Image (tube, rainbow, N blue to C red; front, side):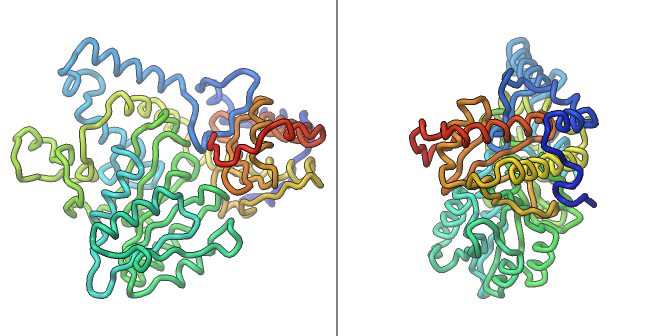
Length: 432
C-alpha cells in the first residue's frame, strides 16, 4: 500500500480535523458503537467497545437459550454446535485464510499451548524455541511451560532475540538467530508496547529456509491490520477476540492452521475437536475434524461467542483494507500533532514511523507517563499505560474520528501546560 509521507497534508487546527472527518468513508460506522458522550476512547487495543450488532447477537443467544433450551445446539438461526466454525469463516478474510483453516475457540494462551503442543516436536538436534525479548509475558510463560513438559530447561532451550533499543526488534536479528537447533519460531505480529509491525512474510520465508516451523501471535493486529497468512506460508497463528475485534471482555480467541498441516493430530485433544458427524458416537478414540476445528478442546462458551457474530459483520461491511488505510492515517495524524503541538514537553514517539512497520496504536513516551495517563482519563480520554514509560493511544478506525485525535492532543497540551498530572500518584503497574 503506497502512502504519503507522514504528516503531509495535515494541519493543526480543529477545522482541519473536521475536514478530514468529512472525507472519511468509514465515519458512518462510528454510530455502530456505544461510546461515552464527551469522551475519546483510545483503548481499543486492550478492549474494544460494544457494537449495536454485538448487543443484538448476545440478546439473540439468550433468547435462543430461553426459548429452545438444549435444542439451541442444533436449531434456530445460529445453532450453537457449529458456531465456532461459522465465526472462523467470518474471521478468515481478516487473516488471509480459507474458512476451514480458522476456528474461533478458547483463549489466546490456551490456543498457544494447543499449537505448541501440536507443532513443537524436538528431536534430531532441534530442541529450541525462538521468540523475542519484547513478547507479551503470557506467551513466554506458555513457551517455558511447554519446554518444561518435555523435560527441557527454558534457560537453555528458549531463545529470545533482544531489542537494541527497548522498543523495537530488528527482523535481521531474528533471522540471525535461526539455526539448525531451532525447532519452532513463535513471534508477535505487532509488539504490544511499541506497536511495531513485523514483516510476517519475510520472517516466515526465512524460517522455512532453515526448515523451521513458524507461528504468530496476532492478538495486537487482527482487526487492525490485514494479513495473508495462507499466501505467506505461515504454519499457524492465534489471536484474541476482545481487542480490535470488539468481541467483549474475555471474548473467545481464534486460531489458524495452514491447510498443509490440517490432519496433524492435536497435541491437546478434546471432545469438541471431533468430526461433527462422529462427536456423539461417544467413542474413546478421537476422530478429529478435518479443518481447524480439530484444535478445539472444550465446549464453546456460546454466550461469549455470540457478540463476535455482530462485530465480524461490521468488519465484513467496512472492509479490512479500508480499516487499515484509515488506521495508518489516524496514527500518522496523531504523530504529526504530537510533534507540532507538544514540542518541548518531554514527549517522544516509540512507534515506527514507516507505515509498513506500524500497527494500530501509537506509543507515546514520557517520564511521567503513568500520571499523565491518569490525568487523561480524568479528562475523558481513555488510554492505557505500559511499563516503563509508555502511553498507548489506539485511534481505532471504526469508531475514532480525526477530531477525537485533535481533542486528545489538545487535552495533553493543557495537562502539560497546567502540570495537572502532578495531582496524581504514580500508578505504575496499573493496566487500565
